[in-house]
Length: 144
Image 1 (cartoon, rainbow, N blue to C red):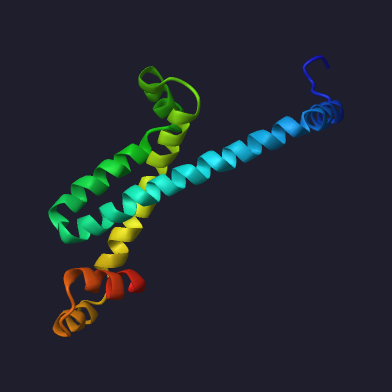
Image 2 (cartoon, helix red, strand yellow):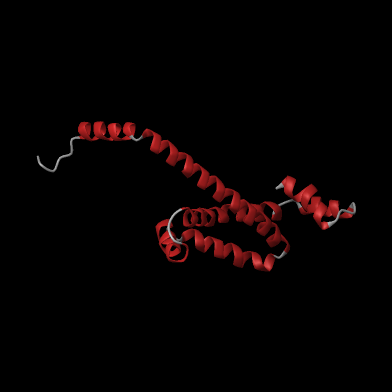
């Protein structure tokens, strides 16, 4: 049949192309890991302090977490298409898109982790004379 695909030939050609371009694939893999790692670091630097801030300002928490949840629902290709006219093509829109997708899980887990620390433990720290910052660093963050 004319429409049939010869799986063995396709597999052989794929292996040959991959083998002939192995150095390029390796460098692109390293670049991909670098962009992903950089995006995660940026997301952590933004989301963890924001999550801590939201635990102190609970009225803003629902709004901010809702916005990050809405950003999470945008398909990646649509987000990239949206960013291209403003930023161009290349690494910057990829880093921004990956950072946006990393914000929600980090933000939500930071917020919920601190909120769910046993209140009696926090009160004990305050009762011992700890400042708000000491309670955060010595009780809430380690127990989250």
